[in-house]
Amino acid sequence: MTTQTTAHSTETTARAAAAGRPPATVLIASALLGLIAAVGGYGAIYFTGLEGWSGIGASFVVAYEFLSLGGLIAVVAYLRGHRLGRPGVTVYAIWMIYFTLFKLIAFQELQAIPFGVIAVVALVLVRRR
Image (tube, rainbow, N blue to C red; front, side):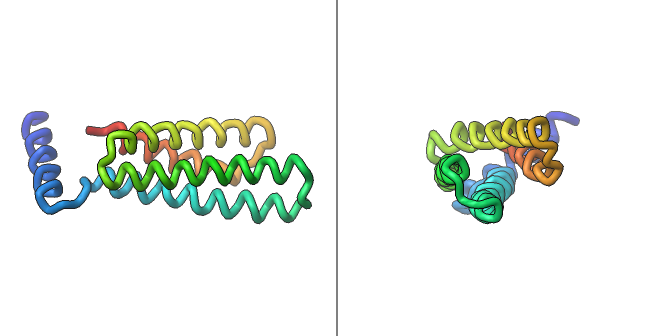
């Protein structure tokens, strides 16, 4: 049974490659990580601005936006099949998981849970071959 599943998976991947498009796991993981980067980047600016723009707040936003941009670049590289795309999205997903855990532990910010869950799902998809 495992051989049939693997053969079917390989056949589906081969068809997708022949059609010139990435496999479904690449598309889904890229969409999820792109969504995290875009929504998280916007949220960092919006919610930091609500609390006032202190020096530490501005530093946080700059660092978060830099990491979000890195995540978006990794997503594009992953979609294009670049050799650094897969490690890039892996690192970005792991960073989002740890950042979510930090927010949960340090600030009891339950709103961060969906970001962590999406990052875990994306990481599982990225690591599948």
